[in-house]
Amino acid sequence: MSAGPTQHPVILITGASSGIGAATARRFALNGYRVALAARRLDRLQALQAEIEAAGGEAIAIQADVSDAASVEKMVAQTLKAYDQIDVLFNNAGFGRTKWLEKLDPQEDIAAQINTNLTGAILAAQAVLPHMIKRRSGHIINMSSVSGLLATPTYSIYAATKFGLRGFSDALRREVGVFGIRVSVIYPGAVTTDFASHTGASRKTGVSTPKALVLTPEQVAQAVLGLARRPRRALIIPAVSGLAVLFANLFPGLTDWLQERFFTRPERGL
Image 1 (cartoon, helix red, strand yellow):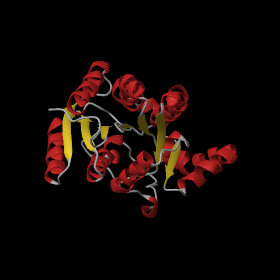
Image 2 (cartoon, helix red, strand yellow):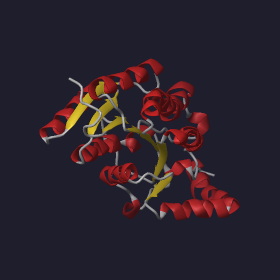
Image 3 (spheres, rainbow, N blue to C red):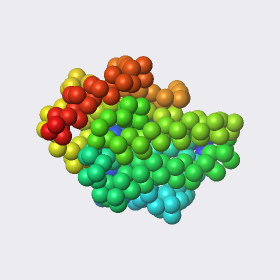
Image 4 (cartoon, helix red, strand yellow):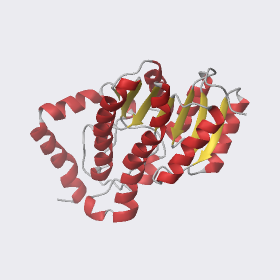
């Protein structure tokens, strides 16, 4: 039996099977949201659903591939069938392949990143919009990255998808704001998830983000909840990452030189 629209708000989370997505699902469930969990790994979603329900929350598990338009439409339809409404869409699904461009596989590394990180978010937003427009209410939160503001070597395609999300979000905000729909982008720095295990990166220099600046999935989840409560256009976390973005914008030539000198040359053995 579906829940009525006057009951607790509903959030649909893509990429909910692990990391930031799973942490966000737990956080929103604890704060009274009904949670639609979407990802490709149904077994993990079902385990998370059971965990949320055991804690007194409400959730459903939906197997979905955001890179497939039919799957996305089905995902939204299943959420609406269960809960009658979608108040927040959190476009979180994504992954990265951080290698030199010439070493990336055209399908598995390039096309797959674009289809999941960028096209998937666009398709999900497109699918929920008719419902949100009809209700004159809704909030779309897109998961970008500091890489969507400051591109670094070996992140060429990943950065392209995250820069693309920025442009998409800005345009969409200006399209749907007249219907009372909010669009936000969150730009986290490094996060302690399994992201690194999927990047395929092999660093000669051992360069990495200082541990003090590495976020936990729970910290990002809390930031997403904050955005849902107090919508804003963009949020960079941690705040200090904004200084690096500002520096790159003010001194692009120096930024190029520093990255080439201390990363590209040693990593390429030049």
